[in-house]
Image (cartoon, rainbow, N blue to C red; front, top):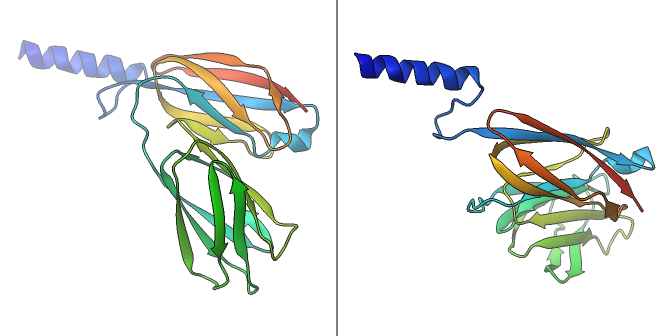
Length: 199
């Protein structure tokens, strides 16, 4: 009876601190905002955390060729993940890249058919369509489970981050310089950062 009472007290304490989960460990959240000199550059910035000892968990993402654009324009994935490309237009497309981290030359002319590609090297991959030179997109492959892509307002939120010390890394298509940050994540807490960036 006393043991059950103790367990109940511990559970209530964890729940009140925001650290109760079935995974048997607590985590925190990192939120923030990109502050670029031009507001239009706040969108589509990849922010991720390096550090910790977690095994990288692969995922599957979808990139559409729609209205003569790659949608989304920027996609972030953990290394080893798969991207399914699909043509949603009624015109022919292809997908081309000559980047070191991944070279691509895919005929994607059949609408609605998914073409799957594994991205097994960390880095950025610039997606192009040789049929429509105005089309461009990016796959950003990161060695982390904890990442986000900013929206129109430059804000981001990275959830379920194990407690610890991390380096915050930033990738941007337009902006190359940024304030390097170290983030301390605490159980059940929110760490908020503002990242200044310039060309």
